[in-house]
Length: 324
Image (cartoon, rainbow, N blue to C red; front, side, top):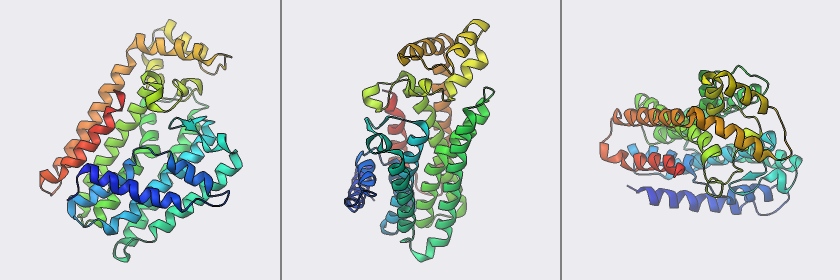
C-alpha cells in the first residue's frame, strides 16, 4: 500500500510525462504550459487513494485519474477566459500569455485528450466509469453556468451558492473518488459514501478558497488578492454580508458592488473592512469545519479497515491547511 507521498509522486510522474507529450505545435504549447504550472494534483491523487482503499493494485486506475486532472485543467483554461483572470497559480493565465482564441482551442483539445485517457480504462469498468465521468463533466458545466447567471443577480441565497460550488467544484472531486473506488472493486454503497466524502471535502475546499481570496497571502495563494471582490463575484462572504448587514454596512457594500475604480485596491479594502466588521469570515470557517466533519463521517462508514483511510484523512486535512 502506497503512502500519501508515494501517491503524490506517482501522480506527478505520470502528469509530467503526459505534459511532455504536448511540447510541439501552437495548439499544444498552452496545454503543456498550464499542466506545468503544477498545483496539488488533488483529484488524481484522491482518485488513486480511493482505489487503494479497496485494492493495492493501482495500474487500472491511473489513466482515468489522469483523465480527471486533464479535464479539470481544461475547465480552468476556459474559466480563466470567462473570469478575465490575469493569474493562475501565480503565473499569467493562458489567454493572457497567448490570447483568448488560442486558450479556447487548446482547452477544447484538452477535453478531447481527457476522453482519450478515459478510453484506456479497463473494459471491465469502462461503461460505469464513462457514465460517472460524463455526469460529472456535465454538472461542472451546469455549475459554471450558475456562477455566470449569478453575475446579473443581487438576490442569490447561501443555499443557491452552496449548490453552485457543489456542481462547479465538489462533484469533480467526488466523481474522481468514485471512479477510483469503482476500479478498486468497491460496492455501490461504498462508492456512494466515498462520493459523499469527496463532495463534502470539495465544499470545504471551495469555501476556503473564498476565504483565501480575501484574507489569504497572495504569494501563497497564487491569485490577485481580492480578485473575487474586484470581479464582483458572488461568494459566501458577500452573500452572507448582504444578508446580515445593518443598513449602513449594506449601503456601503451596494455602493462598491459593480464599481470599477481606477485603483481596485480601494474597493477591496472597503469591502474587506465590512466583511471583518460583520465577522462573516468566522462563519465561513465554521462552515468549512462542518463539511470537513461530514466528510470524515462518511469515511468511518466504509467497509474497509480504518487504517486504510489514514492517508485520505491526511490529504483532506492538508487541503484545509491552505489558510495558514
